[in-house]
Length: 257
Image (cartoon, rainbow, N blue to C red):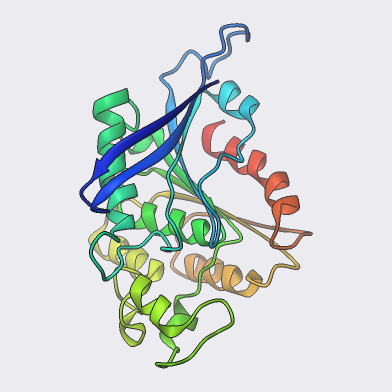
């Protein structure tokens, strides 16, 4: 693997930003069917209170011949915030893929571009693929923080133990208006269905002891009721890397295998 740190000026974020790239191409490895095809691209989205780092094992990227691109989303929920310089959704769904295509010949179209995340990043992966399905053909979401219904019920001055009302308002917009908005993955999916557009392939998983389990089950039920094809898996585990390290190779295999 080759490791590259890239710095660029972002219009969406109104500042210079950096992201990490991990490129396959170890010539010591034997050829296989995946290494004979063009290199594909995976955007990897971190969770709340985390920063961007690559938790995808190198051997997976080498085996399936895909580049891992790791941006930093702060605590943005990977959405376009209200204030200047906080358009994280615009950055990862449009500006960054455009840059990868023009500069590195990666992320050329939806068929070779995937997005994956955990917790807040799981929400971001689903949201990103649903708002830009023409750029992202597949989304993998681990233990996703699918909390729009909770956000919608927040009142000014409230705090849910993770963050306060003002934080959620900055990320999602006015909480009372979040349902049905561009920050709502369910609304985005309904819009694609109404317009007759192709939806991304969706792969989800969550641990049976995860505090976000019911949120993931609710979204699974939503997709099932709409007849939206997806794969949803539960297994023993909590909201931690013991579970995520077990299921990351499984989801990678489903997306790139």
